[in-house]
Amino acid sequence: MPLTPAEQSRYSRHLLLPEIGTAGQERLRNARVLVVGAGGLGCPVLQYLVAAGVGTVGIVDGDTVADSNLHRQILFGPADLGQSKASVAATRLQAQNPLIQVQSHPTFLTRDNALDLLHQYDLIVDGSDNFATRYLVNDACVQLGKPLVFGSIYRFEGQVSIFNVGDGPTYRCLYPDPSDLPACAEAGVLGVLPGIVGCLMANEVIKLVTGVGEPLIGRLLLLNALTMQFQTVRFATDPANKHITELPAGLPVCPPVPSLSYADYLTWKARDETVQLVDVRQPDEAARRSLGGQLIPLPELLAHPEQIPANGPVVIHCQSGGRSQRAVSFLRERGHTQVWNLTGGIDGVPLQDQA
Image (cartoon, rainbow, N blue to C red; front, side, top):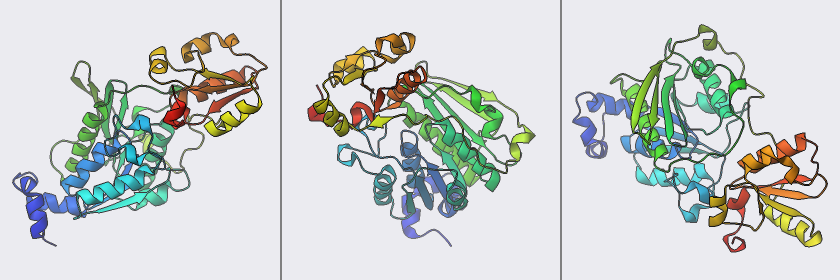
């Protein structure tokens, strides 16, 4: 079906490129692309794929919008706090380009639903923020024969690559052993970094769909935003990783720990004044916003766990829950039975209750 006049007008600058032209734009319109994660990476990927005219764009994310997301997840604003990321993103993106279709899947990707969700699309983009999901996405793509565009960010550094195209490598060819992965913990990230990396990921999607250029197959692009240096590393295919028959189970993921909500904490504190609140963030974070708890940064707590009473009730919080989960798990492994994690950290506490 030829491009409509509305499509010709909207995508006119693409049509002027001989490498893309009408044929390339029609390939984009016929493509079905699923983006896993509507967070820091997913937001720019989604916006540019929708703007480029990818005909069907899917979003899978079971998370809700939090205040700490807003400095980098540019599809969302203060009015969206607490709402489904996938649903908010889909509404906003559909308004951005009514000529395409945006499909929302407001759920977390799991071993049970991964194959069904990914099967509906031609190409998968992994913008997730945890290793368990990355291995799950990779293994599902290998089973289904779906190309996978990958990106990741950490502090000031980013990575981009393409997996599972023809005889090319998979994610497991690059990172074969999940046991070598770091423990779950929160980390800072430069706000503009996911925008840079997300645009690079969207560029790779467009190249794959239209067949132009040299996609990052068998190459890992490394970016350092502090020095603004790019490096490309080649890596080979391990044939053993091209034959996956089962989706992974039990991969590294932050383990569940005893937790309670802020409302439950207040109720408990009103009944028992001995409940101690501990903040495991850094001093500069506590200086900006605080709940008034005792400040013991996580590295200090891990080095000196004796600072936490073994018998008294202790509730531990951080910014959004990652570091406090690690602290509670660490302490309980060492016999502290009266420690709990504050679900959602200070991000889940009403502003009027913060100092």
